[in-house]
Length: 494
Image (cartoon, helix red, strand yellow):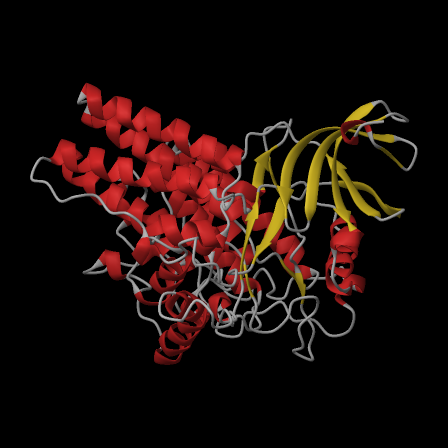
């Protein structure tokens, strides 16, 4: 029996792999007992170096199966067979919001409904003391009934009044950079307000076609969340209702205390087209075992009544942009930790031991989480690991030639990474295919096609970084080249 035909629990036949990450794989499968298609998430327990991975997987099965809500993916079964743990879920037809975004921004009415459904799902989870920690377009998928489902509670943190971490080590950053709350980037304890910030990022992306912050690297993006003002949503999407733009701005407040009082208040805001109030003490901390709690949400529905829409601020693009000094300082420390290994790798003697990273950025693919630790710099003198050693395009006055040269430099480095086996063939092929489309658009001298092709290449690259198919040692060498290419394309199209 081939891997694709493996049968679990005597009934679940694994057919097509539809997702892969550091915690295992997601398969399209058939339940031969009930005769239905399902999604099966598996983890090879032999690949787990300690108990944390298996424990996190087991907890995911427990907490997700314990929630019954139309906005949360349904879990049918779970178990362990030999060295394989598995979680059987409903198979969603899709698409995910990430796939929808490939075609551009969504209609305002659809964004409102998605926001309402996701906020309702978060309210149900927060009422049980659960924080998702990785709300993003790839983890929100359409079901057969036309509603969206929230996937992947695999990195959920159980809130405990003791303040201790559960399954997630302190100072470990878990989440996806473009949708990561500033306080979550610090690697400390977070509560449901981090999910609300991520929801704000999702709504912004659905309306504007891109997340509010996207830097050339995950570290740069994390720093932008902590320090940069929120872009003016209505300038990017003029038909956005003022109340909705104000709601998104409040969700993206740097200080958690300035965000809405809870997910339930966000639901009411969307239904009433009013701006919710804020509550400084909003958390999802519950006394006792949160898995035994099925009562009211942390913030009662009527605790903070919605207010009417305030007058528009003088500088709407700066709404929610003020960050407390402790947050900016802590983000700077986190960034230094993440960048330390990169800086040392470009200055250390090749014979010196590779510096150890001091923080972990975990990014996830749709329906699957991938833990990606910045890899120690190779000590081999034959493999360039520092972005400072990557080839760079020769400056030119002609925008078309500049873009073509920047594209050539990027493509050459992709080829080099594939040859030295730093980048696998599938990831390299996806980048090469998009690069050829961009090259064709440049040769046709069509600015619109060039812009679209560049956006596709960037999305492919970002997805590869997030799902781990483009490892840190590859992105270290490609980040600056992609940034240079983007600048050249912007100059050409502008």
